[in-house]
Structures are given as structure tokens and as C-alpha cells.
Length: 272
Ligand code: KIV
Image 1 (cartoon, rainbow, N blue to C red):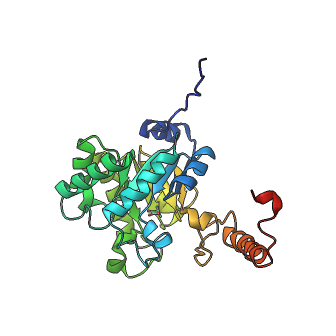
Image 2 (spheres, rainbow, N blue to C red; image 1 turned 135 degrees about the vertical axis):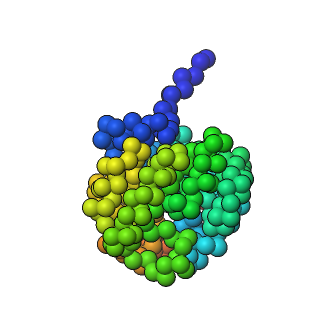
Image 3 (cartoon, rainbow, N blue to C red; image 1 turned 90 degrees about the horizontal axis):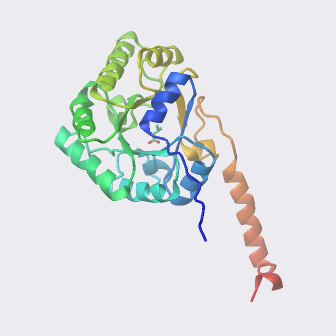
């Protein structure tokens, strides 16, 4: 008996390039484990980002700084096992690439080899260019990240909108071009004015993916816990919350507790 296996068309960096050229918007969401990655892949998401936001939403740290390379690889490996179609991008965590380009390459190779992911992301412009070139030179696709760069929180001291001032906006535009020239396949623009994001998106041939950067980026990304309402304390203006999962989970678990206490669960049909 022959089995007919449905061929799944994988999203690649080339696909994203074509999407930008044709004006089709790119959807990206974070995920950190097998089960959610499988649901998101099945729902038609284009890119899954194994974000270092795992440091916040999974580990409960205040910043993204504490998460380690091995912890990112653990999350990335789980996501890879849940996905048939999406492109998977993994954040290079703080401390795994800033020292020099050799270290940046070694960290990227470790992610690719041990997790099976398809690409890496790093924060920064001009200062990250040598590393981007080195990693891309080894055949590993790199996504850039400009604007609000959470790994630099102690340098900036706040999570407010970036690049409102002319000098910072000009630097961001230069950095975006440098990242493109260095070989990045896409750039995340986080929390910058919509007009600036529009200008940058128009000036680049590679896609921009916005978060708090308005509707003219080539795609959008949200952290899954924010989109699904798991983390209800975080309510920035840019966030559209599609579910209130925290409330739904609380209701379900309260019911479970009550059923256990009243000996309603398990009943006869739920027993052997
Ligand atoms: O780590 C992350 O989740 C991110 C997104 C906010 C873009 O970098």
C-alpha cells in the first residue's frame, strides 16, 4: 500500500523576499515550545521567532539579559520539532555575539547545529555589521533588529518609543541600509514612529517586520503571550490582544479544582 504524503511548501528567506516584492504582508509570532509552535504553524504563520523574550515570559526575568545560549537552543529545538512549514528564527541571546564576530559565528553555528533552526536574529546596527557579515558568510541567514533593542535596556534605561529625535532617526536609517548591505534577509523594527518605519521599509529591498512600528512595515510580529492574553499586565498601545487566555484558563482550572474537591471528577465514564 502506498501512502500519499502531502507536500508542504516551506517558507524560506526567498519566499519572504517574494512576499515583499508582491506586497503580501508577512506574519510572525514568537513561540518557545513544541505544542504552541505546532498550532501556529498549522494556523498559517509565516515566521516563528524563538525570541529571547523567553527570558521574560517563560522564565519570569525582568529583562531579556539572563537567558543563556543553551536555554535558547533548548526552546528552539522544541519549536523546530513542532513545525512543518514556517521559517524559524532564533534570537542570539545577550552575551553570545557582542564580543566579536568569531564568537557571534560560533554561537550561531551552535544554534543551527543543536536546534535545527533556519536562521538567527541579533540586535544592533553599525556595531553588529562585522558579525552579520561573518555569520552570513558561513551560510547562516541573519535577521536584524533596530529601534527598541531590549538587550540594551540598561544603556537606554527605558522602553519608550525610539528614534523620535532626528539624529536617532537618521542613525536608524543608516543602520538599516548597513544591515541590508551586510546580508541580512529582514529587519525587525521595534517601537519607532510609523512614518520612520514606512520610510525605512520603502528604502530597503529586504522586508521589515514591525512591532509597534505602524502598518507600513512589510510584516508584523507579536509576542505570543501578549497576543493570546496570557500576560495581561502588559498593555502597550501597539498590542492587539486577540484572546483573554488568562481568564479562560483561570475559569477552566477553577472548575477542575471544584470538580476534584466535590468528587465529580473523575466520574464512572472517565474511570477504568
Ligand atoms: O524576543 C522577542 O520576542 C523579540 C520580539 C519582540 C521582536 O525580539
